[in-house]
Image 1 (tube, rainbow, N blue to C red):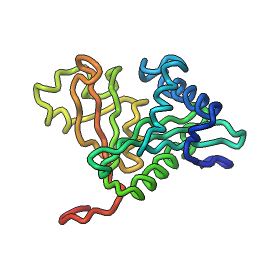
Image 2: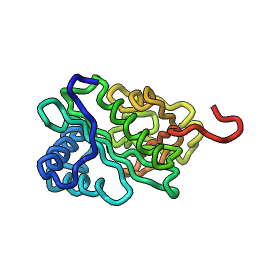
Image 3: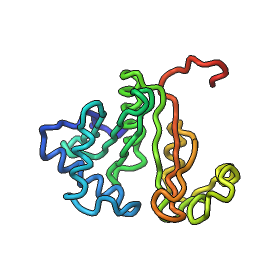
Image 4: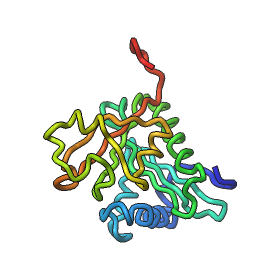
Length: 194
């Protein structure tokens, strides 16, 4: 990780840090999603991450600025957690901050009894072989031949241990799926596990 960066829980009472986190969310997704075009739309997402039972961690740079953020929310009685969102300042990407945030979330999830961490990676711009087609025609074959264009987040998530587990066709409109990835965060106690 970059020198002088620390990962801490997002402080619920620090308006400046919350505002910085909202601005980071806008910056990180401006070319990927129209969900958070401004601070007014991003702030509720940040505040929601502070809800009961959730995890919200920020990476703070040496200048006390927010440079990364990861959130997690429990499902299935806390056995399965959703990673949402993950963002790193554009100027600091590919320096290990995203990896460190994911690892910190994994540790927190495991400490709370979580077994699996999953995420959805939207394909709103046809960046994968699953975008722009009718997945209902032959979903297993489409998953089996999955490819992606440069810039899609699949390689990063794969590099930190996530595996393709499925897809929700048309999640963002016709031909715009949400691609699901997951990984184990605690050792399995099942026969035949790897």
